[in-house]
Amino acid sequence: GEPMNFLLVIDHPNQNSFNYQVMHHFIKGIQANQHTFDICDLEKDQFNPVISIKDLEKYAAGGFTDENIESYQRQIMSADCMVFFFPVWWIAPPARLKGWMDKVLLPNFAFTEGQIPQPLLSHIQKAIFFTTTGVSDDVFQKEFGSAFRLVFDKGVFQFCGIQDMEWFNCGDVGFASREKLTEWLTFVQSFAEKL
Image (cartoon, rainbow, N blue to C red; front, side, top):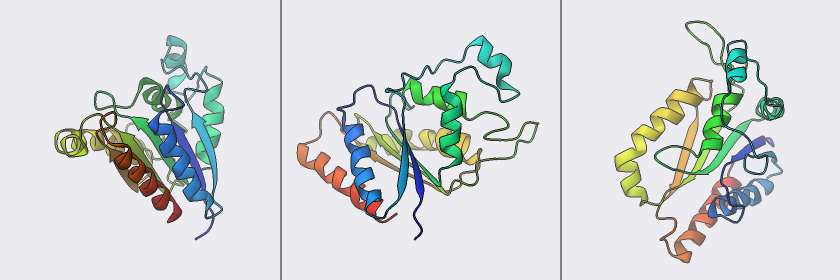
C-alpha cells in the first residue's frame, strides 16, 4: 500500500523498559515499507497530565494553556494511524497518557461541541495499542479486557471518529522468560511489517 504516517505515543517512566523495546521493534517493522512516523514521548516531554483551573476555563472553547498541546494536535492531524505503547496500571493507562487524552482530545479538535457531539478525527484509519500487564494475558482479558475496551475503544477513540482498533497485550511482564519477551518483540516487528 501507500506509505502512511504513524504517530507513536509512548508513556513509560523508564526509557530502558520493555515498552520502549516494543516501540523500537514496531519502528523497525514500519520502516521496511517506507512509512514515516512521529514519536510523542510523554516522559521525555515531562508532560504534565493534570488539568488546572485555567485549563478548565478554556476547555469548552477547545483552548489550552500547555504549549505542548499544539504540537501534539499537529501530530494527530498529520497521522494516518496512531499507535500507543504503555503499561496497564489499575486497568488504566499511566497518568501522563490519561492526561494526554484529557488535555489534547479537546472540543472543536477531536469532536464538535454540543449535546450530540460529532467526531472530528475520522482521517485516522486505525489505532493500535501495545500494552503490558503484570498478570497473565488470559486473566487480564477475562477479568478486565471488556472494561479496558469500553474505556479506550468506545469511550475515547470511537467517540473521536477512529473506528478501527487493534489491541495486543503482553502479559506476565516482570515474570516472563526472556524467550517469551523476545518472541513478543518478533511478533510486533512482523505485525508492523505487514502494515
